[in-house]
Length: 121
Image (cartoon, rainbow, N blue to C red; front, side, top):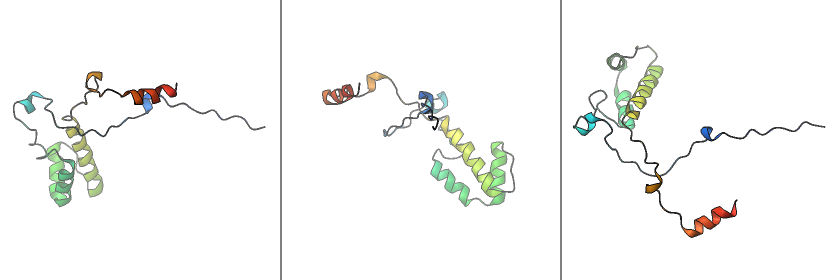
């Protein structure tokens, strides 16, 4: 007789939830409130625009840019570009606003939705 397989339940911390809400940029630091838009380091906060800027750079410009950012330049352009993009993602992550998770700003569920939810319990 075959042994029963144990199914592992997913922990809530392993599950990600996404939403379709468009988030507008809100200033999160004093520099942004005072008018410094933090564009001096990369000259943009758009990932696609920065990716295009990297594609337009030749090898020497890309190495110089990496040195300016404090990264060690390497000869492999693909790896260097990935490192620069990862550094840029971390940089723009500093300026992303935290979504509002309070229940006050959540839309109220209709009675029909609540009825459906009660059926499962």
